[in-house]
Image (cartoon, rainbow, N blue to C red; front, side, top):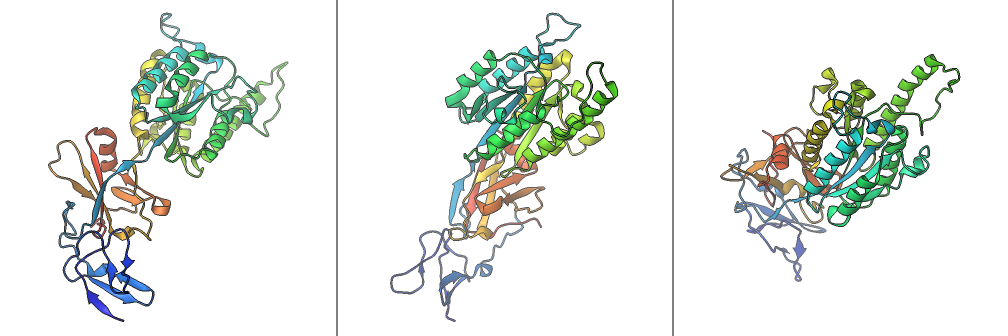
Length: 392
């Protein structure tokens, strides 16, 4: 095998010269001592021969000797479906304050504020439950009232749908989640998938299966009470199926105590959106909406969900035929930072970044993700060419 020392490093691919000699490199430089080796099927970089003197450093600048290319991180789009309870109880208000808005009016006001605040690029849709079509048929929920699309094209339709809807009927959560899952299965746009459930009541039996039949005249209270946990379990299963879809769907939960804090907290955990790691101990993994402060509670919940739903996923096509996936790094620079800081790759997903399946994008985790979500001035850079930095 022939071994030759060269002075250039390819970052985005190798190309053999017309004469069959060493490959042609178009960008970047190589640290001293790096090698390219001739193999029977072409020329390859001996990647382990390229050292980085400051491998443990927290900075890695675009002018580093091994750097070949940089690109500003392009955030993966966020797709958001609002799953809004329009059951009859949403027409209630705080009994102690007759001038207070109904829960429905408060929900419309809070969602209107959210839709007007989000950027034109945000993708949002809305599904009401029960639907005004066949409320007991899950197929009726597959087509949203307004499909998910960029707000620049459908903001008016969403606001119009909210103004035109009114409370009435039961609380068929199984139908709602089943329809949303089916909708996203056929949704072809890129980006993350998210659902916000806003509800004030106990789920009812529509779209459920294998439930006992209870007498209503006279009412068989023991039987009726026994159905409630069965229906709740079927909602849990529906949320699990939604969350485990491919691609996965995150399910945010905002609801009143009538539906049980334990039940709603379970849904948030199953939907991969617990508010804090230890929220199970206080059954507060969801957003609690009290009737007396429904509008204020929902406004705060939507603001927090808006921040959490903003993705920390960035597009980077690290196809091994084009980019060496072991030579990608991520820099972040935000408010108050005099220079960028390199984020290590962390396959444990605690503090750092890692590839998504197929290496078409990366996800940032931990404190860096929190900064990306909350710092309007933050800049994320993808750096190509230097060996990927890892913790330690």
